[in-house]
Image (cartoon, rainbow, N blue to C red; front, side, top):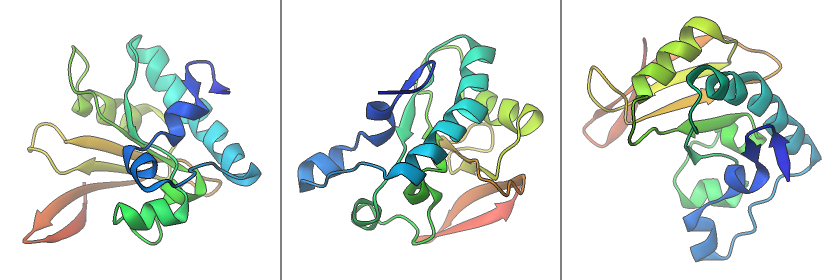
Length: 150
């Protein structure tokens, strides 16, 4: 099922962990509606701007899958409002994606996830009905992840 021009529900729900654990990772109608908004308001503009396929490393997570991957209990992945983008190769970097979203799109949260000072390991972006435009950087301090204003 297409959720937008270049994005399928299968791409948004795929999880190796879900397959391994036998978890059915499918959204309900409200979560699906949120995924469609996110796809059309964030994913598609990024895809159209860079004119290359955009790789989603994590999309929708049903609550028990989120627990299995040790996600935050308030994760917007569970409501269908968040995706993680990871451009592993090619001319388009995670930092380019991050900067484009930050400078051009409406979003709820945009997180520069770990990595180096020049390029995140991946980009977390969420879109909701109450977009805050919050821009953060995730860092590890010992075993703990902390989030600072970018």
